[in-house]
Image (tube, rainbow, N blue to C red):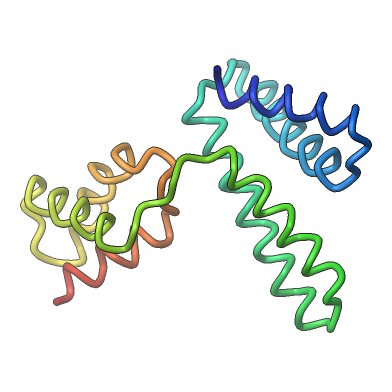
Length: 148
């Protein structure tokens, strides 16, 4: 079953259960997916859907940071609950060691020796991650490995 189908089924379940948090979270995620499909004129497959879910999670993390600065713990807690729920639709995240191993492989394959060649490494690495690690974490790992 595709990730998008899982989201749609989860929305139906949330509607039946009357769970406002899950309902709101799923509707926002499905709306973002639908908007991207309309904008690009395509039907998204799992990698595209997972990328949108990661983007939604990143947005909510930024919301948490803003809410904490504004002393809005209620908003931060709600956003954290949304993140936890959205993450349940993504594959298990890579451990830092697994990410580092994949980054080392990509560096070896690209022959990169300096940070200037980071783009080549990222081009090889990102398809291998397939939603199991954020681009930020990957770029930090690659940058650290190329610097050291």
